[in-house]
Every structure is written in structure tokens, then in C-alpha cells.
Image (cartoon, rainbow over all chains, first blue to last red; front, side):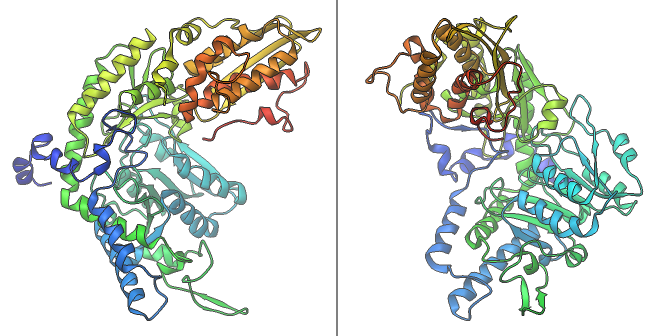
Amino acid sequence: MSARQSALKPAGASAFDVARIRADFPILATKPAGKPLIYLDNAASSQMPQQVIDRLVRYQSTQHANIHRAVHTLSEIATAEYEEARRKLARFINAREEREVIFTSGTTESINLAMHGWGRKFIGAGDEIVLTTLEHHSNIVPWQMLAEEKGATIRVVPIDDAGELLLDEYEKLFSERTKLVGVTHVSNALGTVNPVKRMIAYAHARGVPVLVDGAQAAPHMTVDMQDLDCDFYAFSGHKLCGPTGIGILYGKAALLERMQPFKGGGDMILSVSFEKTVYNVIPQKFEAGTPPIAAAIGLGAAVDYLTGVGMDAIAAHERALLDYATQKLAGMAGVRIIGTAAEKAAVLSFTLAGVHPHDVGTLLNQEGVAVRTGHHCAQPVMQRFKVPATSRASFAFYNTMTEVDALAAGIVKVQEVFC
Amino acid sequence: MSDPKSLYQEVILDHNRKPRNWGTLAQANHKAEGHNPLCGDHLHVELNVEADHIAAIAFEGESCAICKASASMMTTNVKGKTVQDAETLIQEFRDMATGQLDTDKQAHHLGRLTVFAGVRDLPTRVKCAILPWHTLHAALHSVADTSTESDNDPMHAPIGDA
């Protein structure tokens, strides 16, 4: 954001009409637990605005057919809308080319695609994969499966007590056998924003490609593939105000072209005979079978919506929410905030002295406050902080300072029950 | 739907604060470990069964309040009972927690354990309440000084998912 824009749009709620935005999200007016919903579980899944819901309805009502198949008009419309969604996603992440954007079922499948398509071809016995302590299980387990299959080794970047990666240690982990770095852009358990651009530059100077798990970053900040220069970037639609069952693997075209297909089937081939099958070009090479067409088009509508609100405005509002919540909870007796990195995004993990997170979650739910409790599919992070689980409030741009107050009031009630 | 707040009644909070029969036994002829990977709850139950009666029982572990209170109240309820009576309580408690036994309308032997009836409305917490009872069942079917990590013990299988 330029200095001029910053002056016109100061950070914080004043630049941002939250009430108008909330009116776009019908679920925010519901009372699933009998009280007005205070939805602070956005890192698990975000809610969907009416504009996206309407787009799904319009597609199913007037545009649905299978894509890339038939010559009839409806199929041509569906194909065009599906490919338009790809164009929208490519613009949203500033990919160089649309064909670098592969539709998957979500971040997990995106990473598995990279593992099968790239990892199984280019990683062998004795090779090393660098991951970090902050990874979600979905950026650990696929690489462990590969390491076991190939006889490769996983090396792990440690973190400090604030939940920040130790970059000196990261650099020391590189060897001649390092073949890939996998790093999360934003930690789902702690909210730490990792210095991925710097880490990518370091890896590239040693000829090592980098896969970035962007599941928790893409919803909260501008992500720019050309600026980051990452080789792969994975994220999910349902954390981005889109539907479930859709996600993206961005990959540099040169890498994608060298990769082997992940799934075999229709649409990923140019020709098939029992003697020889010729694979399709990218991205179709990686999109075997009928894709989730409606979900892809819905995700296209979701990034239109987010772009309309403005990713910089979203980031500024969420920063204000996080700062306010952090300040509020840090002042409460018995609250321990887990993850205090200088750069954080939209996630506040905490424990309450003497109260198990699951009890916190159940009691907060009685107040209408929806948080996630557990290990957040990031058990290495929990082990590092020596806690079995945490409670996690995670924010979206439709949350308000009043909801942060409700979270704090809910925590006081939990403490009263257990005092 | 009953008010789930009623789950955190004083009796449950009291057993969470001051768990009864907490620790290990000097001498135990049955034991088992229970684990719920969903929330990281784990507990260890030890028994001394003499002449088909539960002469002594102890537990320890790390868990949420619902699990710890359930374990504590379980120990006080099965101590001195026959193995058969304990098995009946295990079955009835499980049926109550999963909504298959309506303790207001059907006969049962659960007594004050009915304070846990509210978990049936909290599907994610049912496993917290049941874990100690699964572990007791596993312990009753265990043999002293043999591993309870047996793969063929269905009650030992972790419940829940991560």
C-alpha cells in the first residue's frame, strides 16, 4: 500500500464498514447454539457471502453441464465459466499464466499432488526435504510417506518461544542433498507469518525449489506468486469464503510440465490406446475426471468478492482485531497466549490455567462463541510448547471488536465455572 | 435439547478438582491405558480384582474436566462391586452418553452418574465421558503383567480421530 493510500485509509475499523460486510453473510445472523453466533473459527473454515451463494445457485440453475467434453451450448457455457474462474484465481495470486493454476479438492490434495507429481519423480534415496515445526499435518505426512517410500530424510526447522522460525537453523539444514523446502506461509496454530520470500531466495540460491502452504495466508493478505517467486503454492477455497471441495495448487509452468500426473483418467489425456497414452498439457494433465465445477466457479466469485472488499483493507481490519484481542487477553489472569511472533495473522491461540481447552470450547459455545480447541492438526507445535491442546480464536474481516469483547467475557465466565 | 450447561454441575466440577482414587495401586492385577487422540486425553486405570469383586481401583492421567470427573465417579461407583455389576454399569453409562438409554424413563443402575446424561447433546464430548469406562472395560479384560497394547483388544483401539 502506498503512503498516499495509507493516509486516506488508516488501519483499523474506521476505514472499514463491517456492518455492511456482515449483511452479506447470512449465517452471521443465525443462532446455532441459541445465542447470536460469534464465529471465531475462521482458520478452520470461513463463511460464505450471499454473492457466492447466489453464484452457485445461478450456475446450478442455468449453466451446469460437464466441461471440456461436448459441443452443445450448455457444456460450452460451463467450460467457459470454469476457465474464467481459473483466470480469476490466477489474477488473485498474480500467477504469470493461467495454466499455472490447478484446481484440486483443497490444500491437502494440492500438497499431495506436488508430492506425487514432483516428489516421487525427483526425490530419491538419501535426499533431504526441509520442513518446519510450524507445518500443518497436511504438509508433513505426505512428505513422510515419500521419505519412507524413497529412503529420503526430513529435516525440521525449529522455532523459538515466540513461535518464530529460527532462520539461522534453517540455513544450516541445507546440504547438497536438499531437494525441497516445504514451509507454511502462516501457521494455522499460532498465526506466525513466516518470512517465506527470504526463505525462498535462500533456497533458490542453492537450486532448491520451495512449496508454500498458503492455506492460512491467502484469506488474510495479498499473495503474489511472482513477488514471492515460490515454486508451488497451495491453498483452499473454503477458508477463502468459497465452497468446500475446491482448492488450488499453483506451480511454475516449467515445473508442472516436468511432473508426472497424479491421478489418471479422463480429461488428463490427449489420446489413449492400450499401447500408449499421451498426457494432456498443463493444467488439464492434473485435473483427471470431472472436477468440482460449481465449487471452482464459486471460488472465482469468492475471490471477486474479496478483491472488491480489498485484501489490504481486510489485512488492516484483521490486524486491528488481532491487536485488540491480544491486548485484551494478555491482561487477563490465567490466560497464556501461545504464539507471540512479531508478525502474526488473524490467529490467537491460548490456554487457561487449570481448564482443559475442550472444556473452554464447550463453555464458550454456550455463550455463542465458536472457537477451535485441540491440537489444530499441528502436533509438533503443541509438543514444542508442551501443551496437549490450545483454544484458538481466529478472525476474519467480518468480525468486530464487540465480538472480541464477547470472547473475553466468555473466558471470564469459563474461569468462574472452574474457580 | 437440555441445557448443556448443566453438564458442568458442581458434582462434576468437584470430582475434577479433587479426583477420587487418583494415582496407582501398590498391587494391581488388571490395568489398561485409554487414549482419545481427538483432544489428547489419556488415562491409566488399575484394578485389583479379588473373588470376582473390584477390591481396589485407581486412575491417573491428563484430560478435560468431563473425562476426569467421569473417571473419578466411575471409580467410586464400581469399587466393591462384582465384575458383572461393573460391566452392567459400563454398558448403561455408554448407552446413556450416546442417547440410547433415557435415564428418566428406563430402569438403570447409574445413580448419580446420570449427571453425565447431558453429554448426549454434545457429540464431540461424548467420547470424553466414555473414555474412562472404555478403559475400565479394557482393564477388566486384561491380564496382569501382559501388555495392554494388544492389537486384538477392540476396547483399546483409540476412539475419535485426529
